[in-house]
Image (tube, rainbow, N blue to C red; front, side):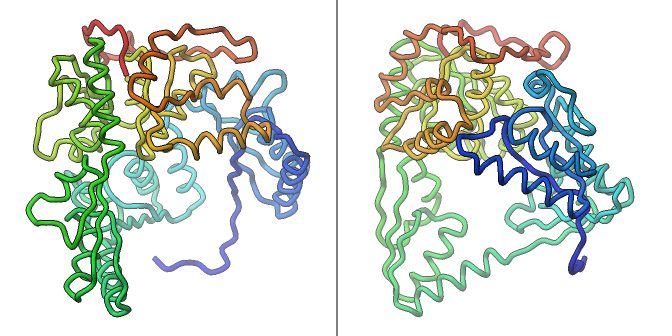
Length: 432
């Protein structure tokens, strides 16, 4: 599908929060943006609501004659309509699936072509299928390494381009490093592109130095020895093992993100071997990653997606400890903290700040508070601890305090309406 030069866009989406910020420059820039959208006769799609910069950009564009469509989750609807009706049209969505279907329909109705990340799973599949059945052209672009994940049962939606440039680019990078006689420091291990770049440079005579966490060491040495020298780092591993032991010593039950890899596997196994009950909650899309060879530790619940995993964790846990982790870890942290701030739940959250891992996150939080985008009382949702015993002691001593400045929203509980939802009979006093 050839790209169209100088494409004229009709709809533009602007994302912002429900606050105005500390400095007037935020307001001025938002007003200028709304005017520019109207001057260009563009239609505005925004996050809905009648507060802060989100309200300001929509009203500025709306009064100039632009069409405005606000899309807001049902849970946030009370925040966005405290006094005034919405600006322009408003779509209240309750599920990611509904929003994805609406997006696919809108693409098709505007006779746009869809280019997406390929595969036949999750929301990516849903938006492509919704668009295709309406007659739009669809092109999926997927790396060859991810192809097995995307073609579990069905053929691709529309046209599909399987790319291998990642491998070719990695080999070229290794050769270039060798030709310049540079030394390579890499993430260690003997899998994927990490292995490829190290071996390509190593066979040309370059010195290698791999740095790998001990938790990932078994993944990196499935069959071959490491390339060059290797340093195994253990700060995160040691803290995770200490946490698992502390959970076991207190005879607590563990709710975790499922799977058999990394720190998630390590904390569950450490607690499990001491006789504790385990309950892992893992999205179906990640199930192959988490069960390469071993069965799950303890009980396991496979859910449809990331958001459902967080919801089930909230249903089954009384408190939360966050180890250092990836984007999925941060997604769960932000979601649960946001729900706590909205009084959807009153369950405590603590961060195990190993090797100052969360310092940058706390610095960003303080920056957002300083600029009035996040209220200062939200800081109490992100309390850090440096050792495994600290967060457990904090959580067991925790008593929720009502916050008169926080909005109280109802959290939908579908347990009674969904036949596939079930209560697991665990005597959970404190679950993490």
